[in-house]
Image 1 (cartoon, one colour):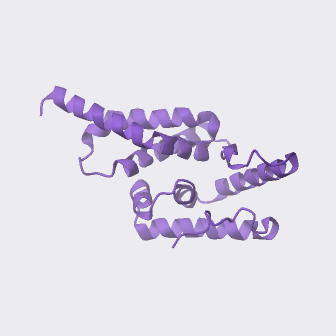
Image 2 (tube, one colour):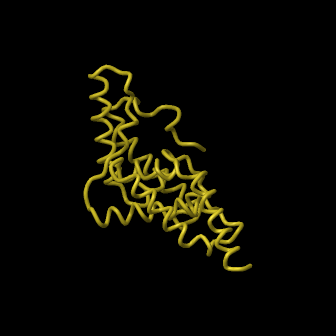
Image 3 (cartoon, one colour):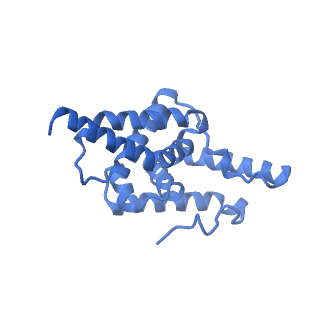
Length: 182
């Protein structure tokens, strides 16, 4: 393959990856580092992906690979900034009254603080599974671990989160969508 053909092939693959996964990566960045820096993180992830896509095998899981790059960008952001991040405020409903909205915002703040206190691997696995909807095979690929380890990290994070909030939330945040999947 000539250099020009390789460049065109690579450009097509990165364009396709951006079209398919940009929204997911942006959502991951919002949930991980907060809405203020999410666009920068997502763009940085795709810039890094574009620079090294030529090394990726044609049969590789591009989605998991880009998630891995994005998660590394989030980790780099944490290392650089060492400050509390924001969970997406978009999780709170805007149709409720001011009291309910205030309660939801306080709950989100508490969840955000608690997630930041979890061990990094548990927090990342939990976010990838529960908020991003990745399968355990993809989480394992993103985190360079086995599926069993990915499943255990999600389970431990969920168990800690449920135990921490079970006394004063009374099931408000445990909807059917957030319950562990088997």
